[in-house]
Image (cartoon, rainbow, N blue to C red; front, side, top):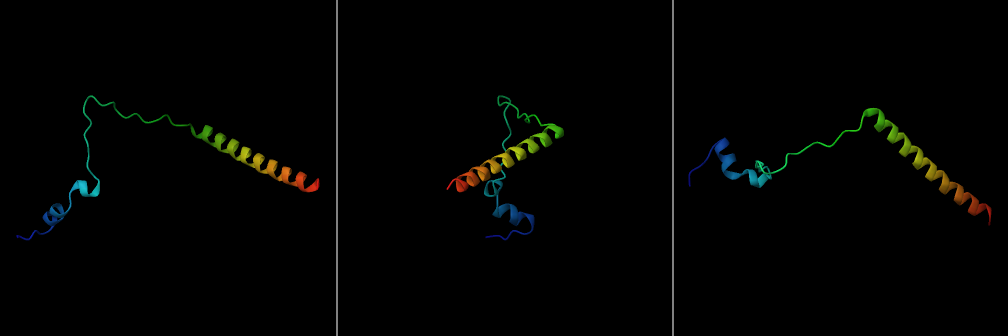
Length: 73
């Protein structure tokens, strides 16, 4: 058995499929990938604020329900 040195040893011991790096070239029949539409920065901040307010409202509803339940005992 002959010894391999340097990059020959690396390429002989591992292949792309061993590392999961296999690259498939799409055929002309496959649809091309299109990136999804992005949310504008101002709208994303507004969505985060609305979700935060909704979460706080839900928390206070639970706190209020528990307080009312304990007060009615």
